[in-house]
Length: 306
Image (tube, rainbow, N blue to C red):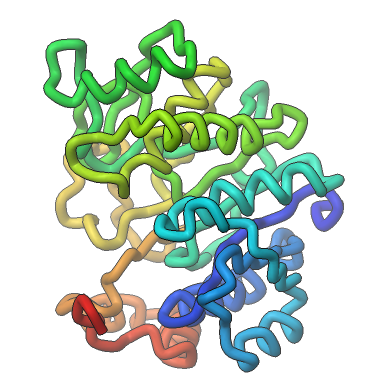
């Protein structure tokens, strides 16, 4: 049974993230098909960001296990460490064969069959949307950071991927919003060990600390030389960049084909209402619209410092 085979991990902290996590859960339970009852574990790794009782009640009603453990003590200034620590903790304590981490700003719209379709792969991932801090080769200005990572972690081979939006060939670099891994590989615990090493060594890209979590994640895949199966275009779809996609292999022409959508801040942006108008065209889309409104996703983006 899928319920015994697969588990999903998310991180939820006080604020807008609560609304995002609720939409993720509700959309999976609504549109997930045979996967709709997969166990979900929502971690709260920092004690100073307690979620509201209403959110805890929602989790209970939807069979989400709320994990209130202060896992992120040493890196509490860095919220992106939450996912690493939560994934490693769950991987250590689960009996499931497949562990999935999802960013909270994700919703489901169709059955995610690919979550259980590994073939001979070790992980199922999607390359990053754009190059950003990625490196095309050793002459790239960003290569200094990656070479430092690779040296510290003992990465031997420079494998490459094509970015899904900008269509650039870069050293292996994946989107951290969807991580599907076989627990027997101990990938998440290795990722955690590597992250701690990198933080202690103070290896930081010139663009800032925000990119450490995802780049160490990718470097861990390279270090372990994992066999990667890439998600097809309907998974982890970048709604915030859909009009910028140059890689034609990742263009989704019809919203009805979405499986999982990574929407980032679009519901707090100027295009929120145009997205609602688009999905309003079908009964299923209107049900998604209702969930978006139910959890108060459409709201002005908070200003920095508020």
